[in-house]
Image 1 (cartoon, one colour):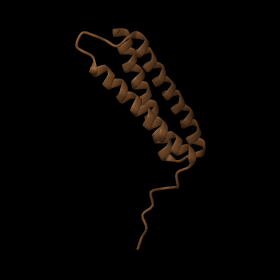
Image 2: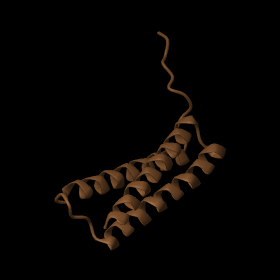
Image 3: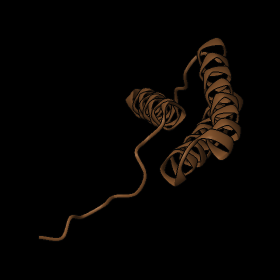
Image 4: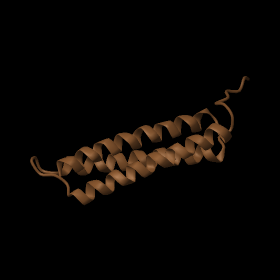
Length: 103
């Protein structure tokens, strides 16, 4: 029987990039839910949205570092996870910035 191969075995940096992607996604979802929970016409406090913005920026930066490491020591899956983490992190920064401006 032929065996099915999903590519090379994931390396540690690939798994780290996947974890950063999952944390970035969870932070973005939490940010979105907090924004949706507000009553129409009200907004989150400036400090809360600034905190969201800083956390998302930090996660995007960590994803960039993970991309550098997966490009050297990882596989394609790690690279894709790191790019996904950067994309989600930066979109979270944009959402938090919009909420911060509206506060």
